[in-house]
Amino acid sequence: MNELDNKAPHIHPISRIMEDIFRVFSELNFTLVDGHELEDEYHNFDALNVPKDHPARDMQDTFWIKPNKNNPGVQNLLMRTHTSPMQIHYMEKNKPPFAIICPGRVFRNEATDARHEALFHQFEGLLVGKDISLVSLKSTLNSFFDKLLGSNVEVRFRPSYFPFVEPGVEIDISCFKCKGKGKCQVCGGSGWIEVMGAGMVHPKVLNGVGINPNEWRGFAFGGGIDRLAMLKYGIDDIRLFYSGDLRFTNQF
Image (cartoon, rainbow, N blue to C red; front, side, top):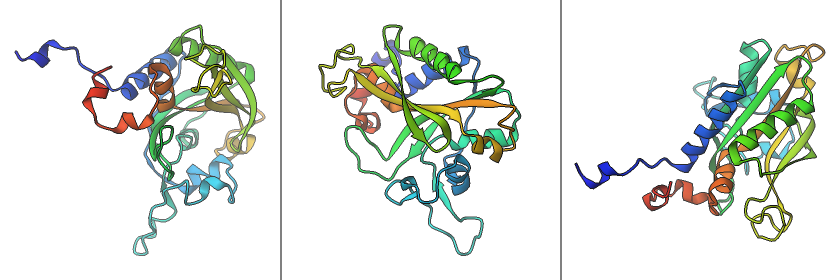
């Protein structure tokens, strides 16, 4: 038996926190749904009520697949920019009520720095049922953050805009480093860190998949898995996740 056999296995922090997210949402009765990374423009943008002139469609944000003149089926394809298309795929094939969680890799054509990568991980949550409201969303996410990060973390909801929800909210958590006192660089002195966008599913989105918004209502939320791992484990550079340096991974 060599020396490595006596050591506990090390799990990459992204894999570790993904397992934690799955476990928490499983306890909240959400079903795990997987999807493909190569997406079409309709599911990535149109079906989510994203306007044709929205900046997210520009080349600086999206990796578009080069059209193939000899293959008409390879048109308007892209590497998905978020995991939100999965909610459209799922609603097209399933009738409510349902609650799903959709994790995966996403791609953005942007400059790399300590907080940004061209490839990173997100998770999308969707719940559609009867008598669903923002109170339902708040209760679900409060439970999620309590279980994932501990009950000492405060959660704040702020009004915001996203094309596929109405109303929309940004979700902040109290800074893990300064404990919400606003005295560190991690939170920029505000005491809060933005971690997620959410809101009530837009009626146009429900209509587009054949679900009557007068009968059913739902909420959706999406967050960065890498961002949560950085917060939970105190990692200050997202590029470390993809460095392949075992000295980094062996700390977990």
